[in-house]
Image (cartoon, rainbow over all chains, first blue to last red; front, top):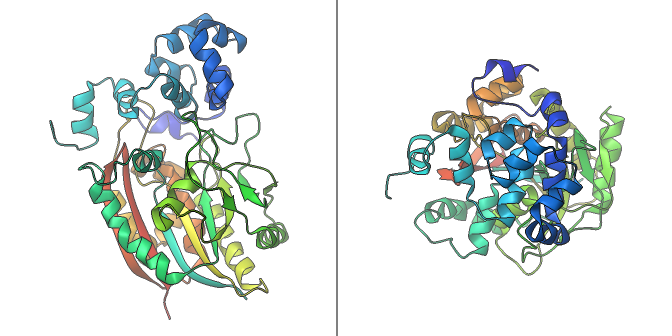
Length: 116
Length: 280
């Protein structure tokens, strides 16, 4: 299926993405366990190193650059666990993907009333 | 023979469970959403099912990318809610309809499906949230469950036609089961949403509303649609809607659309439900 190439701005998590993002996603998946959440909080870089993340991947995670994490193959369902450890609303992650201000994103994409 | 008493379609957005956990049910953001489900809850109280078949997808909570089953079926005694990163939720474990689940597995393989068969596995919000929406927060769930996982995360995901075919086998399994259980089928996921890419936040209210009527009264176009069409119309994660086809195909071709509800946005998703009964 080649939908990724035909639907604008809509990356599908296909073979290439799954391979590319394997390390980031594996690291994020592990945050489902309390012991790993504690390790992440105690020393984030050491935790990321233990999953063999590249410098580029580490930088994206440590900078909470959601757009970049997805570009590197991170799948939102896995990397969302980072937002559980370091709380970030999913709409802010969405706004970052869309390169929009959060308020604009809520209004223009999700149809919420401004200031409402 | 067991009896299909209804086919339900519903969203399973995790924020719904989180809203209940935080006591946000009656806040302005959530009240219209939850109010619309009251009719579905009442229907469920009256229908008194014994078994709930829940078709859903895992969201990187139970299955990692090391093994990705296209279809998986639970045959466990008990399904605990999985920790999705926010810690354990205060909801009861789900009791499995073990014998019936094995019967379904037998039927599937007989009909040339090849499911992964799971004896020890946890369930994420994909199953939890639909159960909470229709059964509330009981001390113990009033039904046993048969969970069916469909891969909608890593492409290739199954075709809509394949989901439809599975629904036909589900019906055959229910009708060939010697017990007299009352079975309700929950197809879950959707409606339109997209969480990734520059089109994130995509919601298609017109397509969602058409879906709620169409899945009841004219499902053929949805069975025939390509996966690409689903992604285009409903967003990359909205393609989860293919799982409603398993439910729909298990019902009669003629159904009554008993209840319908739509609300957008629930978090980043067009959310809604249908309650279908087989027409006499």
